[in-house]
Image 1 (cartoon, rainbow, N blue to C red):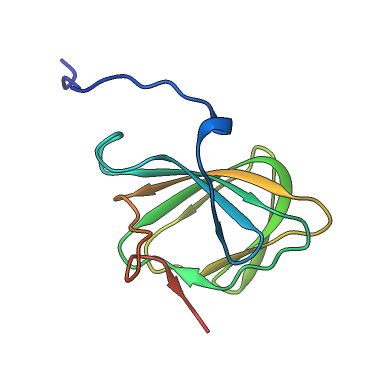
Image 2: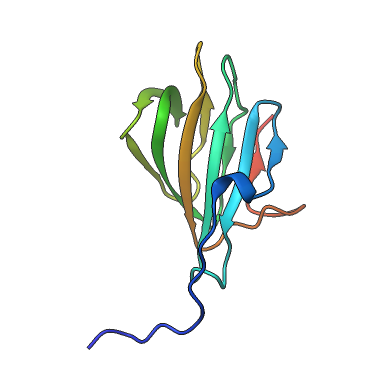
Length: 128
């Protein structure tokens, strides 16, 4: 028998969720945070055209990224990987990564487990 899940179902739309900008051209929309979906964070991400994000890593959190539309390059531990609609990427804790777009924007869905702390002193470590 499966585990019983308690809580209320929620229905929403991406247009109605507030957004936050990071690193210039990266727009984040928090879809779910710990508690609402277990110990995970779900983010909608849009990286504008001609964007170059800094190298980051998460010390405690794994990230699963699914590319929804557009394309970008993921530089993972110094190696470049091309991502386009339908591509998936798994990043365990401690893996250095950054994303770069060319002429078009890229939209992605990221799931972090355990939940990602986005606050000051959180689990997003930016490298110089």
